[in-house]
Length: 91
Image 1: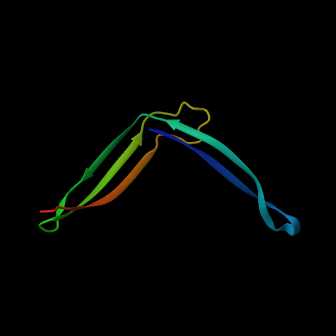
Image 2 (image 1 turned 180 degrees about the horizontal axis):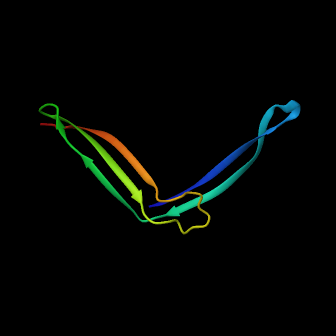
Image 3 (image 1 turned 135 degrees about the vertical axis):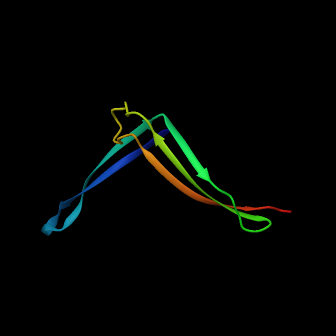
């Protein structure tokens, strides 16, 4: 898995009259390349002669530690996904 992005941290400081105003921002680029694996499972449920519903679940995880000193992410990372597929046949 390879992922990149920019992390922006905004600060709030006291302004004129003590009211809060936006202060300086800090931007850091990050990148991460990790070996990963993905497991998934789903089942098709017949809902009629030509129609089925297939709910599914996927689990993706990275392994090891990040060797990139620029990264602000702390692996291992875990991603959970779910979805539903509607199947329709033309018979």
